[in-house]
Length: 628
Image (cartoon, rainbow, N blue to C red):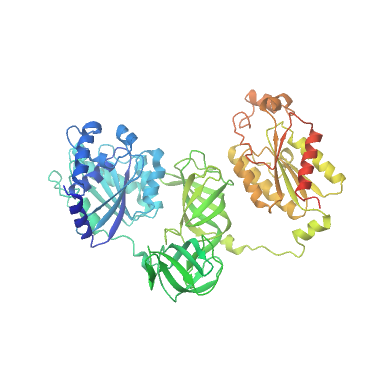
């Protein structure tokens, strides 16, 4: 084994064919970590101190008897070592005389599918391991589909543990035939089957004497020679702005990473969304100005004139611009325990662009057993589906199969800030570019002025029986008596017409509030003061409605009463039916209520009368300047 100095010297002179990024994937315990450990060991990439540690850890945690357990080179978490599994993504670098490699060891357990997708998102090739004793499993197919979805075009089908299958050619051929038949629809560019024994090194770097019937390449031979994607420097210019750099009044630059293409000083660039153009005056780096920059360079651009550019904008060549749209079709991998629901509002992050987004339609989910398209109303954790999405503002993007960096996005929960999904944009929806807002002569401001008031949406939320409808009714009556123009939207009344097709599942509740929010927005556009009385149990949907309105128009009123008080009141007899099991998904029993964290008004109805509560609402409305 090498010393650190010797290893660095060898690495500096290696890799004439450039860098190959690849992942190992497959079902649990198929030998992914062992394979990478064997590659590092056989290619002399392990330092003397690392080898000593490996020998010690193999005695403590190893699963290979007296032999070294190469998997322990990758499984660095204590939980991984104790359980003998991979949980996190482990990245390792190694090199040969021909090529440099960055390999990601991804977990095989279904619950860690999100980590596999993370590793696949930057890979050029996937080494898919199959245990020769078990054959093709569901997780094998799931990882194959995710690799296809993430744009990986080359698969090495590494049938591992051939020593435990007697080095049987018949067994190898049967597994390969089964895999090719089941994945025929995925249309990979190459699938290269190789029989291996990662533990013993058969067909990893050296040819196996026990499998002399295999006349194809060893694993390393194939990794050294395979041709992957074209150079990103030859692709269209894409420069996502990560930071507007303005240290003082005499300097304004736009910092970011050139994700594709190349540029030179004097070249024209265009802001993809606004369409404004300027020429590059300087390309600035920490080490001085450059004449040119190419894909992978981190630079700051100074333009020859001021144009409107903010963080998240994408600069491009004026003749080869990305798509700009607020609606598009995408394939989504869901990564959270709470299901993805159409209509719910999330945050979408595409490059440096961040905007609210909702899934307008889940067209279908994918059955990973046979890749069939199946109807679905939601996506559960680790499920994949084809969706239509709508963002709050247009974003710049390329189809994922054209350019990964500007075609990929993540979905973020708006309250926990957790990443809940990953997506690949397929194409812009035509209606996103064909439908335009028609400017009417009679505006919202004019309608409100004719009524002598400012529009407002009073959103009453709380448990059933808390008093929402009672208070909203009194508020509307008093406003009408004072000459104000109002309308009332009530949960029960709306379900007799507009929302009569919806039930009370979580997905239907989300859609119920989405529709009401749009109706409330139309009434506000008409200049009215609208009272909305809905349990609206989820914070995300209430926030979605707030964002439909102009600043100051939406007042969230938390009508709060203890569950015991609501059950005692029980004006509709719903709590009794819920206790008897006659009503399912009833808020407060078997469906959650997410109380507002910062409501505009908090009314505890156990302590005051409905008339007093209504006066507090009207006072808040007056204080907000909505009553003219």
